Picture (tube, rainbow, N blue to C red):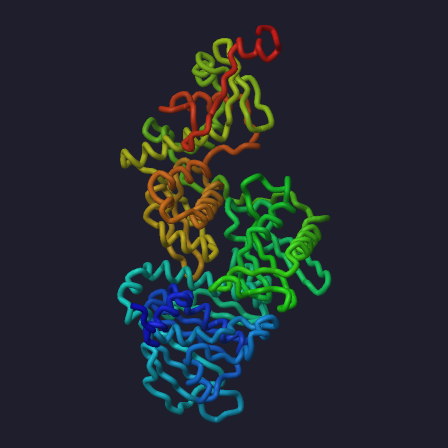
Length: 563
């Protein structure tokens, strides 16, 4: 039997498309504030937005009549006909945001138009108007959303811990801050400031808050404009690349978007300048006539379609080349305090198995290690700074140094975890890290797994975390980079793959000797010796071979000495 759904049910279904979690509410309300011409926006959340969300702006405000009408389904001031969709320059236009939010929460609006002496307070709960009264309030609008999903227990149970939801809210505000740096933003959590961006700080201040001051301090800038399409890029230097594209932010007409083709374009311009499997950090902003782009492709407007996709990509390439050409791209590292990161500990039989790989490889030359290896595999040379050329009982052996190091590190870490021995080493002084919203969310979602793997982090206010300990398989200088790479990997992985051994694999991968790293004869001998002492020296934890052997017969066949 076919029936027409009642309005209450329709509103709750529509709310599911607009309101996925508290951060969805923050996004919709900030968009409304920006469309109202706000130059200052204050976002306050309680329990990560699960209990209460407030977005206050200094925009044009609403009349009492418009404030009530705003809660009606598909009530909008942005469009009048379908033709208006092709000339939009605002964020919202379908008029479903407030109606959908009010269907699943209690919403209070306090608003006053500029020039009016009195404002209005509208309260709507579960989609029903509770009250509409005149009040005294500042010019602009404040919208308070309380008890989100209070009338939908099943949806309410799906929300994550407060810290996780807060990380999502922080990420949303950060996107708006990067796209609209001339607007002041303030984010407070449980009445404590998370971050403050003043309009006077501009793009430089926004970049510093989003990516940290070290990354943002010397970004490469590029600009290009062709046929009315304007591109601005801000790219971090090559030493700050990530193992996933999660920290490359794309914006079209101030709207955060996702585009595989644009990501591919940006990575392609870097080409051989950037190690394979690495992605740049930064921001790409595209300003284009609104009639030449369709922002209504996806319900959340995260994807866009250009009328001339090829032209847009070509201009992005040009702006990238303008940023890269003529720039000093040499790696720059601050090695201050490198040797002071860990406590000095006397060597002992107990600590030797868990000591850092870097510490082991830097031991003085000695005969004992060489003799251990010569009985099995004798390293001869390193080729392409990636492979170790060795001889073993008349055969030629090629060893992948990164895969070999991964296997060693993985087994050490796994053994330490299984035997409940110490897997982390405490830093003398905590390292305060400024994490991006995505990184902070991964920390909150996987704090226990990180601690189990050796990373000890504690919130340090706002987007900052104090790194107090790192896995013993790492050196002090590697701790931050490995952690950021792991968090970046986790952000792009399916949730089902973030648990168990996969996490340990990530630690091993980002803690290991890399391809392209030059090794001394002593280091090669040590690496081979430790590889042969593992339970499975012939493959890394991902199943890739650590070594390939060519027998004398294989070589004779290659040189046509035998058939």
